[in-house]
Length: 561
Image (cartoon, rainbow, N blue to C red; front, side):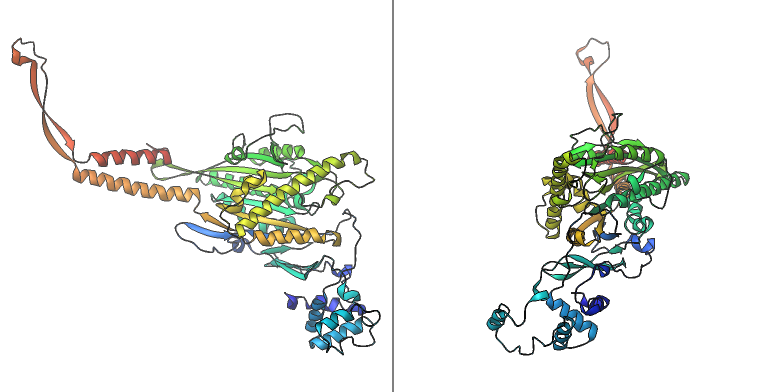
């Protein structure tokens, strides 16, 4: 699959008379593509269908390839051999030859003196037996185990990553955007962050999450170097998605107020999911490392206990406190590895002026997620020579916690893709927190971070498979809360006007005679009762009750009398 796009790879595999994929070829990338303009990214995918104020969007998935770095798990590398049928296809495509000619070229490249296929008139049974006889043709390279590796990266919009997968050979993973080893933080934010912050500012829920193997660059992508060190904001080219998003949001807040359009108010929560506990990283405790445990996912999503933030500096200070309280440790894969799933929740309350001094208010949520690294247990523990070897048990337990949360996440994605009637969100606190992002009224971006080293290729394949699966999830996006409130108010005003007109047409004055005790001091028997003639409005009693109900609804919606 996709072999026509890898002719260069096919040529590289036959250099020097060898069909092995040498290490120098594993991370070849196509020329870097320039980032797409913001306008084209804002509608990252056309809606699948619309109507009645609703549109369905697929989750946008980007892959970011981390450059090769010195510190990586030390796993003995093995030579990589593609399955025989795929090697023949590659030779056939690159040499424009027939299948028989491709077989001859392959045999000659291995130093064979005779063509082992020249007498291929034997039955299947005879053929299977002939490969086990001593002497004659031996399976050699053709039947060797296929090892995982990264073969090719096609960067840019609608890019792809070509992997060699055990059991299936060459496998192409097509994604919405692929960012190569030389991609900058600004390019990542422009493609996978900024369009979703724009939607958030418009009143829609949004989520940006990073997924990948431990040590593949998730925290760097989301925060920047050293967890983003939010220095009252010394903005730099290395700033990650989180500081760039916060900067964009509070600049928009200033513009919004300056133009007299209304007000934007924000409150911030930062939690981590450690095992099956939700831990508040912004608690009132003064000392670093103190945490409030046992939060419910509903309280986090509703903003209970969140901190009001007025500007970037306040938000940056809180994020710095939360970053210092995160659970992190040294592992064999990373000097400072996040040992839990970190979720930042920013609540927006948007108030705009309306006619007749009425106000419209909408609320929406932004989630910024740095998932714990998917990892093999053998790569989670410390190296045997580490002075912290006593912490091996803790690292092992943390790896189990992380993988259980990610397994629950994958199960939910699988159910959503299959459109199962039941999605197991309740299997993990992580999936309960991400429920809205996965299958709700939310625009979601997933950044899959990939390590290109051969010893990490198996984990990279799993990460790309997750990205491929989650890209098939459809979220139904309704009109923003603000737009919906405006439309509801217009309908309400029209109904109020129609009810008032009905009252005007139906109501009439009616003369009523009633008797009541007389206030006269006369003592005769007839002096105790008197008849009183009055007038009253009748004919539209039900309409009056309905009008009162409509006015109450308008008061709740706008705060106006």
